[in-house]
Amino acid sequence: MTAIAATHTLPKAELHLHIEGTLEPELILELAARNHIVLPHPTLEGLRAQYEFTDLQSFLDLYYANMAVLVTEADFTDMTRAYLRRAQAAGVRHAEIMFDPQAHLARGVPLTTTVAGITAALAGSEAEFGITTGLIAAFLRDESEDSALDVLERLLAMAAPIIGIGLDSAEVGNPPSKFIRLFRRAKEAGLHLVAHAGEEGPPSYVWGALDLLGAERIDHGIRSVEDAVLITRLAAEQVPLTVCPLSNVRLRAVDTLAAHPLPHMLDAGLNVCVNSDDPAYFGGYAGRNLDAVAEAFGFGADTLERLAGNSIRSSFAAAERKAELLAELATWRAGQGYPSPK
Ligand code: HPA
Ligand code: ZN
Image 1 (cartoon, rainbow, N blue to C red):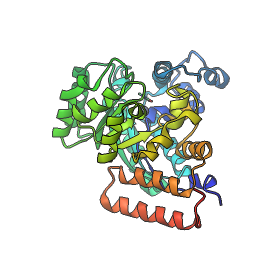
Image 2: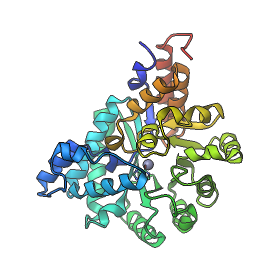
Image 3: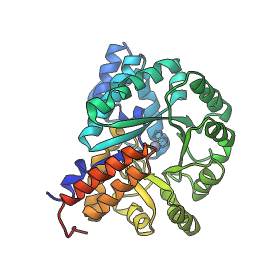
Image 4: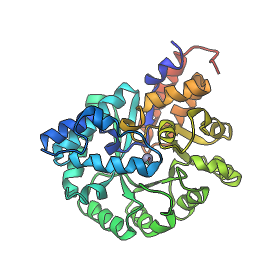
């Protein structure tokens, strides 16, 4: 068994995943029919033809438009279960899943529908798919901080089972400094803090996410490589960076996979892991992302083990669960044989 073929069996945690970005075209059409929604591109071919992106915004336009098919609790449950099934096939053993509550509220979908639908699927995840989960409410940085605070208060009031908050959507022009009160409130409520930064935005947004927001993990963070002082700090503090290689290629954050800074980040001693972001839109789930970088950069079992180990250690899973998954990873590594290819 080669290391590359083993990436689907490699036990891993997925820490950067937007559940709405797991809506596969087939499910979009199925839900549209179920809810009597007429889509602008009502066929598979027509829909698939839209999946060419020039930047983050061109993707977000389609991502938000396709959410129109999510109406009932069952829709959210079906989407989440479909993700869990695919994640299981990709070797994901623990998943921390973001959702965009404001995007659904803006379409008139009550918060209770969104939260209940997703959590119904998560409730059965460990028993059915062997995947432990956590739910993260991501706030849209191109909306106001007051809107985010209002939704956070509503989530807290309804005791939504969230483990943390995140910050996503259009990055450039919406710096971390816009959301200081939101993150302070979430911390006060005992929630974990993560934020997208340095995907399209400059390294200063990564500094801001760390120093102004207190982010425990940075989603993406690839533009950190432009700032040597920042790299030194990220390495020293072992700040987790949830890198999404296929996303970066499809959204043109990098020109090609070969030009992706992941090898440089690993060489610099950063705590990076590999994630799928919006797998239905970017060409694959966690296993496919690992396969792609393993192939592009010739990563062997050692590097794959390091990436998977980082994902497990950087998760918000309970200590016992992390230990269990690290033991599984050691078993996987033993099965790869020595010496490792790289
Ligand atoms: N970046 C920012 N916001 C997002 C993304 C992303 O890749 N996916 C869903 N919302
Ligand atoms: Zn993302």
